[in-house]
Length: 409
Image (cartoon, rainbow, N blue to C red):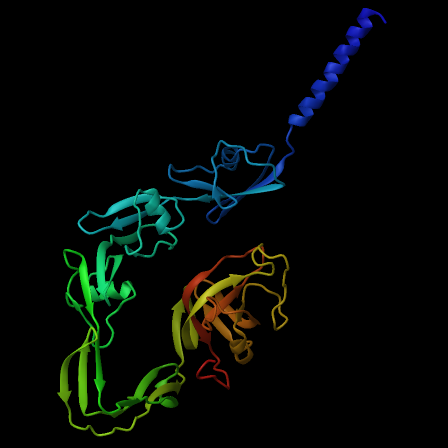
């Protein structure tokens, strides 16, 4: 074969290899979603760099802001692993003000998700027994005030054993309760329970017991609730204070740390029968008006409830979608869910939720936090889903139902 022909064939083969290599280096464009608070940016990109996506979306970052991918902070200049789609979340930094004894309030600018993580990033090491308000797991918000009081080393002498602990309590009794050894009954401590923590950190608990020669019996009283039209709906008032029955012995012996320290001769006491405690529960319905969210409403009952929200597909988080409520209405804005016991007696009732608007009770859901009956789940569509979480006052709107459950189950 001629030399020129061989040379041309080699060049052709190298050209094919180059084209294949170039094609393999081209990344397929993928969908990218950037969540920045309430703003959502969508784009397609063949890049895998978070910084490039933010630049294309026109999102700028402050020095302390951070970007999350799959819930973890990610560098802007590092390519992400291959995926079919990407979602970035921009966590904006906020300012919290840290107050500690003997120090000027200290501002901390951070994008950490919780109080504890923010303080850890600021170089503050927390220990069990330190005082922190709000607690370490509390989510951050702008201009949050955080109070911190470091704990002290304590030695508690109890029942012949030394218990070492840390406490930020202000009194001896509070420190003992925090360590799980509270003063019970006639017990006392050295220093006294209402005293400040001692300089040497040493607290002694004196166990005190008493015995009697005859039996002493306390008979507990019963507690009853009675409906009354003298009180407005949902108001409660003690009509009769309960009192336990009492039988008292004659001789009382006092022991401290297991040793007898005193003996008292007592007279026989009169036996007192228990008296029930009666609480009145109001049934008087009073119709009121209020301006909420700029809207004048007329209501006959209001209460504090824990509010969450849901959508047919759970706000894009569920594998199975539920498009209709228990009353066979579409899940949308204006329908809400309550625990089953409330739903059965309140289905169709109109309510008003501040920040959400008018709605009717149309669905069943589990209480949140678990076991909480005072809970309302606000309906949305998946397209307009807004997450809710917190306590709020809701209003039951007129007309007043013919049958009212005065005490909710």
